[in-house]
Image 1 (cartoon, rainbow, N blue to C red):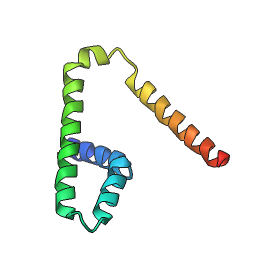
Image 2 (cartoon, rainbow, N blue to C red; image 1 turned 45 degrees about the vertical axis):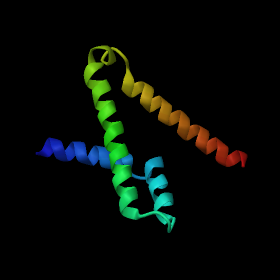
Image 3 (cartoon, rainbow, N blue to C red; image 1 turned 90 degrees about the horizontal axis):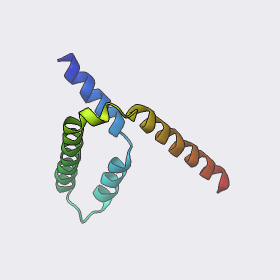
Image 4 (tube, one colour; image 1 turned 135 degrees about the vertical axis):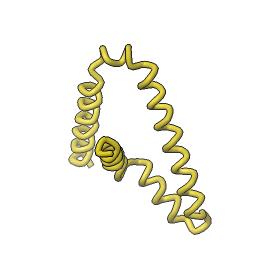
Length: 91
């Protein structure tokens, strides 16, 4: 049970404030859109993309364990953060 809670918290915190959330906010702010439909379709999109990621991870685990994925992902996030900070000062 604790493992499920840890997985939930990890994914929940990773998804807070990302492009998906911003898109959902923008779509829900349009009076022509039904917020329940946006919720349902956004949830379906997240479930589908997460399912695809899990399938890739499951079937590719023999290949992926030889790749430093955490290093690559962490470096990518740091690079994006650095570029974002630099773009602030260029504006």
